[in-house]
Amino acid sequence: MSVPQPFRHRSTRDESRDDWLNDRRREARIVVADVAHHSDHLIRLACNVLVRHGESDTERRDARALLFVIDARRPIRTAQRQDDDRRAGR
Image 1 (tube, rainbow, N blue to C red):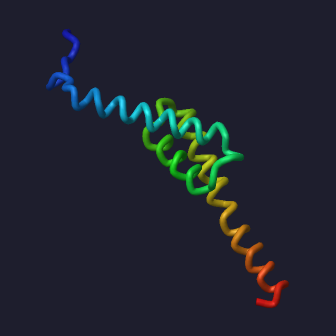
Image 2: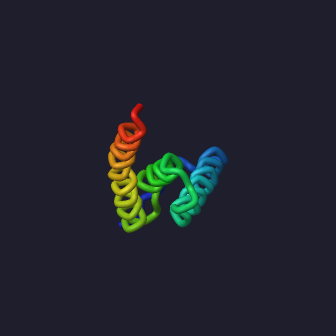
């Protein structure tokens, strides 16, 4: 039996898209590697990129776990802000 061949040849557009996607993945990994120095919004964006386009199952699973942690922190910050407002008499 022969090895199936791709239907179409890779074009320069496909190569450009792959280069662009590799750059986005690299940027997302940089953000995730230095979580303490980035905003929750940027971390959330980076995690979403890795969840969708991560190269391995482990990378995608870790990004989902970090996304879960970041999303879980949000209600606590809102509650803390409301408590601070009540203490200040606002």
